[in-house]
Length: 329
Image (cartoon, rainbow, N blue to C red):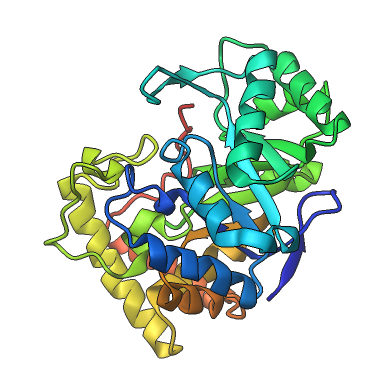
């Protein structure tokens, strides 16, 4: 498995990271927990060394399931989690909170659930507009000094926000959504991370399932699936009209991939990993079959001709890539 450096840190990760949002059965529909646990161990055997989770996945469920699956293999991986939300008495998220004491407190919960003494990387999940970034970075610096985390970063932050954070410390990474249907990061965030040598962790590499090749016009999302709202991070990706057009694009992408004896999912992963700023592409894995297919995508380097052909399909089907759209955070 190809290894990439995360920004200018001493962290090196497999180019594919194991995303665990899908291990939250309350937010991503039904999954087979046992199969997902088997996939975690198999991922390590196949060279995947970075596992990404967050306290809000569930909440807490993803961290707990990951810890159980990892067991004594924790020492062999780069472990990433995220904090920055507050919860009511029923465990429901009720808003963002990245205040100093809250960050310190929530990290302790992450460590307990993940059954580890430290995290390799801790991220502020979303910007808290009611708390100065200086305060959040001060908490992260404290955790680093205390040996509770090795490095820290942010998720879903703009260049302006990262600039402010850099006044008070140094970010190892920014984790933001990036895939063929959502190229908003290409205009500012990706160039910024490349220029400042900040690692870029791409989530949603398979378009939250759109680029898996498994969806059809009959696909419906259940009540427990966040995609049932029709929106994906302020984009109407799963609304009926947009979804129908996107499926046409995927069918045409399948034809390109087939010429190379690859799947559309492998093409999507290769496409994301091909950007020079991307340190790691996070992919959700539910079973061992998906794992093997995803790993096989790493060696495929898309040339300019393939990328231009992909862009032409989006244009011909009148499906936007949102590259010039600002992300509302």
